[in-house]
Amino acid sequence: MTSKKVLSRRRFLKLAGAGSAITTLAACAAPRQMVEESVATPTESAVAVQKEVLQETKVAQATPSGPKPEWISAKWFDPPQPSDYPYDDTSQKHKIRLLFFSYYGDAMRGPDKDFVHAWLNKYFNVELDPIAERDVFQKLQLMVAAGDIPDLVSGLNRIQMIEMVDQGVLVDDLKPIVEQYMPNYFNKLLEKDWSKVSDALSKGKLIALAPPPGPSVNEGMYVRKTWLDKLGLSEPKTTDDLFNVMVAFREQDPDGNNKKDTYGILFWVPEWIKDRNPYGDFGAFSGLFGAPPGYFITDDSKLSCGFWLPGRKAWVEYMKKLSDAGVLPEDWLSQDAAKFYGERIKRNDYGLLPIHPWNMYTGKYSQDPEDAPNFALIAELEGPGGKKVGWQSQPMLTWNFSQQLTQDEGKLKRVARMMDEFSLNSGKPARVCSNLWGWGIEDFPLGELVRVQILDDWTYQLDIKGIDEWHNTKAKEMGLGLSMHEWMGLSWGRWYPQMYLENKAEVYIIGGFRSDQYYMPWEYALSRRPAYKQANITPEANLTADLDKHRVENELRFITGRRSLDEWDAYVREQLDRIGGRKVLEEGLKQLQENLEPVTGIDPAIPL
Picture 1 (cartoon, rainbow, N blue to C red):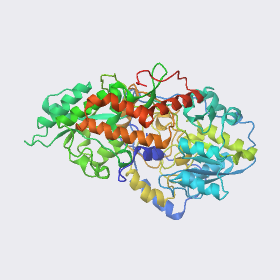
Picture 2 (spheres, helix red, strand yellow):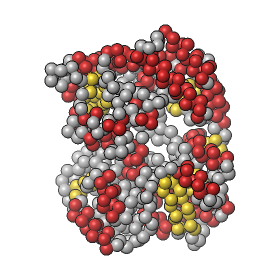
Picture 3 (spheres, helix red, strand yellow):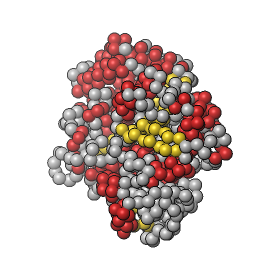
Picture 4 (cartoon, rainbow, N blue to C red):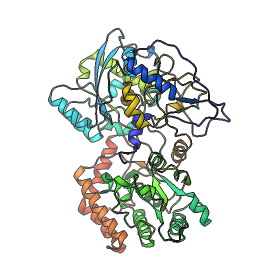
């Protein structure tokens, strides 16, 4: 979701909710002093650090020059109220143990130092006992073996969840609990429609909480505008245009050094994905040929797979065309992904960069800040198969309840209420937890920590040091770590807390990103681009590995000319009949129908 030297998209989403600082502001002004009682008393060393931070922090203020940017939008519900939970006896205190994914693993520091932790304990009348791990599945297995099962678990993939359900560790169907104890999530977010979270269903049963799908955010294509301008080229609009631009970048000396040392395009291919996708983020653009890279549901409700459609042959022919034209770097199949951001991306010898917007922002803009603004996002391309690229956003499976939790009815009700209040951004706990190092609205005080006044309902800026440096120095020294919001404050995958502010309330903020000028407009543009609806099926792991290995080996043979494209139909039959693709489709169709997905058959364009 990248080199360890920069933030990956997954890591940033865990840290910041993908939208920390939003819009660049103009004139400067000091934040207004806020005086409220703290829920935790900082240590003397923390206070000293806090004072230093206050001296370093600059807060900018301006009068908005126009209407809200188009890319800021929100759908609001009335925030949850105590009266929504008449079943919860708030006079009873419960100890709740949580196991969840943490990139850092050592983030939790207890309520004496973690202000969000303390606030949540007080708000819900609980004693939260969090366990942060990088490998949640392994940790859970060890805890089960020791008879020490947590109440809540987050950080498992679907296959791992099903395994734990089958072992009797996790609740196999959360539907009755949700319908009885989670009114906001069930009635407002899902609108009583379980098909909105079909990915969280297994044989019609809800195995994990999940938010409904949000807007799609797909891979982007960035072009070096300075080269376009020098060669008098227009921004490409089609895949043919794209090819012609790549050839021009290779042949017409766009950097003006009188050498043929430039290339049309550069791929970033992480080591962990090479075996099944040697094209990196460029692989998603096979969708423009009508063949997205994976299983999907067609517009007429059929299960399909882009790897076996006629459009995939057209995509492979296109890749061969790029290879034959010499627009790809000679090492495109063997380049060291670990050195991509540290070395390759700084060479500036390529004209197009297909990459996820977050990796563009934290990679190119972080590693090569002087050259980065020379690139422009190509918001929309069209190919022989249309304009669809990448996948629509899917429900993200979040929290599992343990069977052990259901044995304590009072604790179960409290946990259900907590999950319900966190399901909406307008809920106070969600707003308290959803920013970087800990921020709150109204009754969430941070004492002498940095204070920022919200200037209006959509603009603010906090200008301090980089997120990694902040985490590794002052944030740790203050005991903030990643705070409790790493495990619960992101409102189940709704990643834009600052965009969803309800009113002009003051907000306390520690840390910030200036993603305003680039990242958020990119995401907005890409979220409006048409995308494919991914089919959430779980083929047998060994079968998937065999199909991927056979596919990648043969596609690369076609691209490099070691196998004739006249043999494409024979290759597809090998995939479907000899390796097992037909079996995957048949079992996948059954899975989708069991999970209430309205599919009516298998795509007839696949030559079964």
